[in-house]
Image (cartoon, rainbow, N blue to C red):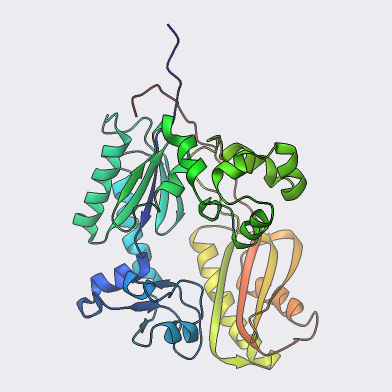
Length: 360
């Protein structure tokens, strides 16, 4: 008698319109109304939009001006990241009641490996349902979830029944699920790649599956093998409970564009202070300092310098940033400045995954 194949049980939990949902929870006057977190009707970029605003085409990363055009009645709300982090911490405490194999992707989403779990529940689907119910009852906002055998499929599945829903893709359903999926819904296939795939006659998973690995590598380089594997349900990336911090950054978007390097240095001093506080809090230092510049026409430029030693002090960061600022003349007025520190003194800790046989 042949052995049953081994699978992992992966849940991807994604909060529904997280920033906007927190604002609506905290302020009942905003409930049921189209709101945008971040941006304004004059400038700035939307960080998140409520579902009421999304009906009008308002999405994250669009300008506040465009959001106002799409939805004249939209309400702009200033982001409160400390509050979002506070709520996120509560949600992650719930996750850890079920498993310590939790990999956060951001404040509002995470992977959970529940192959082995603290509840001893063999059903990943029932665990996801229980987790979502607890988030709703104990925190006050809704979440959606995707459940499957790997991170790739679980991530895609979590978007299927949003908001406040979940989708399970069982092991024997994975390939059929991916074959029917529009290529634009494949996680990791962005707008540019989608257009390129359309030009090659690839519109769905089944189209992608029909292409050889040689064909895909020819047109997509190293990503070709990734596309070849994932459409067949092959994705062996483990849930890493300790994600490496690869970069620490701080930035600021200005109400009025800056045209003078003197004014830019004043703002960079403030940004460096914020960055230093974050570095000291987490006991992190780094060697590579990067200055981020976004011009009034929304084009972006970065300038970097790698030092022979680790730094975290504001004075050293600012000294390097000033050098980068004067490296070349600004091509236009500046709407955003940011500083990041990379090449950090952090070390990767690999998580151990135990795979079991189970009825999904």
